[in-house]
Image 1 (cartoon, rainbow, N blue to C red):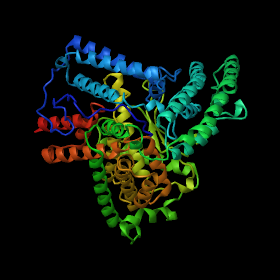
Image 2: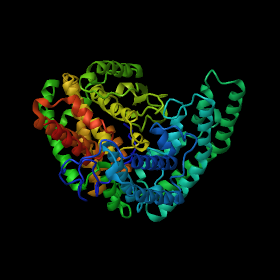
Image 3: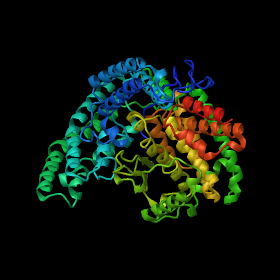
Length: 605
């Protein structure tokens, strides 16, 4: 998934719903299973759920565009003030207040499910407060995500923000009218960052600049933000069409074009010349501590950068050993490390001429999975999965990803394939990619979350280690479903697994060990065999430090827990039940996930 950086859980001082542990929870072994009442005390439950709803609304109002992307459309007319320093300070005060109020609720009176939500809320609050010393608002734009580009991608109405009613058109227009103010604040923040030595790397902003330049148009009618006017639903009255068209035209001409021109000129003439030439986060003031917090958030563990780096190196070596076995089956007889490069040079693995041909493969796979997954899962989301192409504006910098369905069922989950050039879209990785981004990866997890009985902050939140760890684990199920019997598809699975292993090496390399951008690209090219992927991924890790560490960390933990349960339960182990245990309580930090599996094993013996 584009998987945005989601709500996380700091690995220190956690409280587990099944096993209370000490402050070094991530490193400790689970304690005895904690007993909880069958039902929550009514007063305690009411108090907790009221606080949980208030907490979630505070987050959604602070970042309403993030709420939209997570499937909550209540605040679709707002873009928020998260990058305003005063708003940011007030938000941290809110987190402290929520923490005190949470601690005042008698946790012992809550049932198992409510205790999990209680503990997850405590994790998230601790994580948010851990970021307070670090001025992330001084880095408001980069090439992977920015408010102007996000809103532009909403303009077609087929992304997270719906455009089917007059009210929805007015909501989107409201956001567009707020964008110039956001741009002014972003420029002010970047100027402050320039003065303090807190800027994006120059290479990143050189890649981002064309995005902002494309948003400026000669006429309002040619602007991407004017797109809704060209797609009025048939049911709109003529009066509404005329009124909305005039309003959109005025907003684009009088507000957006000038503001976006100002942003583009500032980035090109002032910001890029002042950007740092270094690569890693450690080059920023207090950057090492900043990166450490990001690791804890992303992985929900207390693992050090060096420990993660070494895990990555071991995984790279293991996968290359698999390459050595697989190569001859594909007609390759060279060194194992050279297999990805050889694959990338074989025309037979790039068979597509049109976007429709790419989509047809995914549709066929989607239909096949509908026949295979019911034997592995008892928990299957009701929401449908749609398959769509990434909008043209963001194709050059996007990766294939998933977006969540709307909570009210008005919009399905969507797998977005990024096809910039069909002739360059490789066929070998399509099975493993769809298992990850589609089903049973992100769709089975995220869509199911919205259908479970839990507070909204959990339906729309989560942590990256569980979310991406589950999706990467889901890729491994392809072997049991016979989807990797074709050696080319098995290579695709290994190659995608290699990408996640390489991430552990280069992310920590750049942000903790002084690696340069060029060093990362070179290492990734040598191991993955694709320089364009190496460049794209390296630049992603440069602006989202530690986010990519979550995939392998989470997947390795889930695989470890499955092996543990299989060994302990023997013939009593069922895969569908294991998956229900993992997914059934929603997203949780990895230490809590381990306690859940331990409790299941103990109860099944």
